[in-house]
Length: 238
Image (cartoon, rainbow, N blue to C red; front, side, top):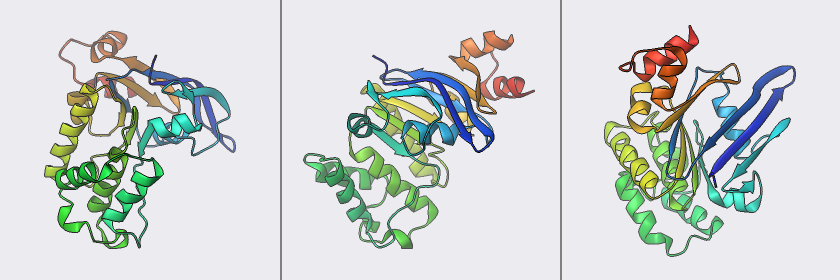
């Protein structure tokens, strides 16, 4: 069973067609790179999977469950591009809230480990409203990772992170993939994405214009074997 299946997804905002028949699937233990320019529909796709917005047509299943259902919500972890924290809760209290919301057993050791890996230990008592953008993103990452999601959506997760946190995130992502987590990662950092992803979906104006492995994408547009993801993407957009 695929961890994430999107079939013929359509989303409109008034008269604008934001997603036009998008289909994709991602398997357990696979990292799928979502590629596209601003406005291509990447964030709308993530919000649709997370059941944060209404869709106009199509189906989405998360770990075999219909999007928005309790099993789907429990299976899904979602890091938005602009995470929002509660301004009056401390860093530690954010993790405690997630642990209770998802009924995470014996969560304190894992929370402590995540705080250390994200270099947040000294800031555990700082309130969300006092944190920098990079610190907020690290807290949001720790919150998403605290409950064991089988499907993980990461929207531009490297934005605002310092080099140490970027390195740690890459390490964590590889560990999760090895343990069978299905990860969909959107990023404008194509070299970074190429180093992490197993396969790709390229969006343009709400449509899938190419998908598959790097080799599949090269074959689709007739590029040489040494063509990197950036070259492939620019050729597709030309």
